[in-house]
Length: 210
Image (cartoon, rainbow, N blue to C red; front, top):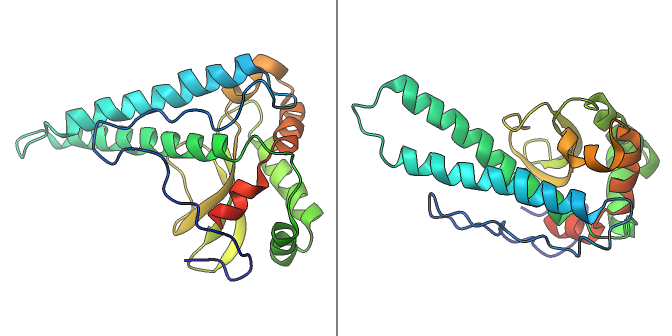
């Protein structure tokens, strides 16, 4: 469903193999040496270890789930399903996160207008998005601007871990607030990381998702 407030082509599916246990690790969609304020070392480590680890673990969990039978204890099946949810969400959110980096941080007029309609102004949306990010500083989680199909509105949501998500919503802009996303470059200085994130947002990718 397209948002009637903002035009743009379809984003298309996330670049993963739908075959259980065969999800590939998608490459970084940008040159990691060219982002402002985010080092190549940090980006490659984040991509290879955290995102890549989630994909590999999801594949292993799906392989185990394929061996489940009617005689498998329910608690074992439940544990696998919980891990499946966590690793799947981590994979998807990381792909969306890397996919909305690599830009110049300057939103186009259509994006600005949509955020202004939803939040009162672009500045007000950014203020709330940054503040939500700071609420997760020193901990773990995600900040997500999404489109809610139930209310047909743009909203910013807080997620404390990989398994929390807003129901009936499509993520449009994703910011990783786990410490692995910034500690290597900024230590505990989360505000500096958030500044760097905003400087590198690929708003064209966000427009395509809308």
